[in-house]
Image (cartoon, rainbow, N blue to C red):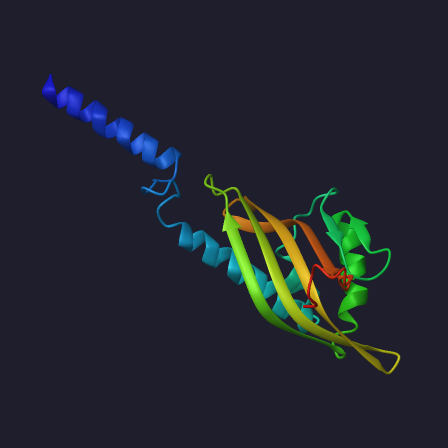
Length: 173
């Protein structure tokens, strides 16, 4: 009888561990840093691919969905759908010779169920268009879904902050 109970306990424990990530005292799954590192590598690979004009390398991390969304920094760059985003990125990659970007800060968060990750990056960028160089701090956010063990981009947004109005209450940044 004790052997049967021990067997059932062991099987139940194995099923629980296999179905849910093991938790530590903080409520976060043990080994979460592994998934955060995976997402950081995806971001690094995507940024590197874009800066080198490697569209295929960039798009291996993008969900092939009709409702994937990208909001870029240029006026009117609100793009929905894998095919539309690919067409847009091919045009943007043509600027790779004049586009420079340095990552300043990066935040990566993974949901406890390890199905979704969201990121925020701050980069110091410059682009030369028609012989004029424009520099700006670019704020980027992205959402990834974990599908078949791979992290795929389902939403991204880039923006440039507007200057703050000096109301007397705030000091200039």
